[in-house]
Image (cartoon, rainbow, N blue to C red; front, side):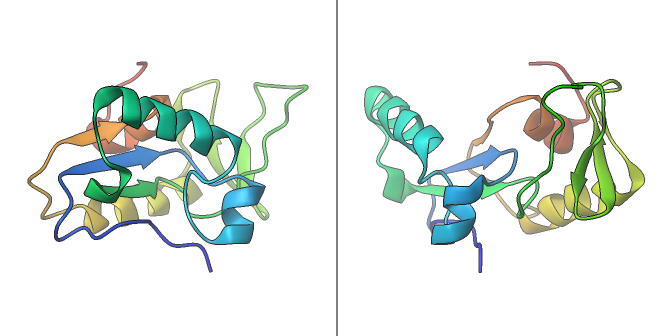
Length: 128
């Protein structure tokens, strides 16, 4: 089962990504695949210990994107969750946005949005 990484109660930073890829789903943790290597390097360069971070995603399951037709909505299973053309959540995707906001409701430490989807979920604004 895929879960966020870190302890939200003791985290110094909260990092929010878009969605896990296949490696993250397989290992059950965020940012452990190729993007995780870049992420870890960026944290090191910033002087941040990964263990001081709570790491989560807007969508906690892998998305299906049509790479040939980038205007097509993104899906989870049969549900359309994100419109890249509008840069906004579709009704089925709004469930994930609300779940994320509930997850982070009592957070008082800095929250970092990694990408436009995370920024939209957290602030309602876009693009980065």
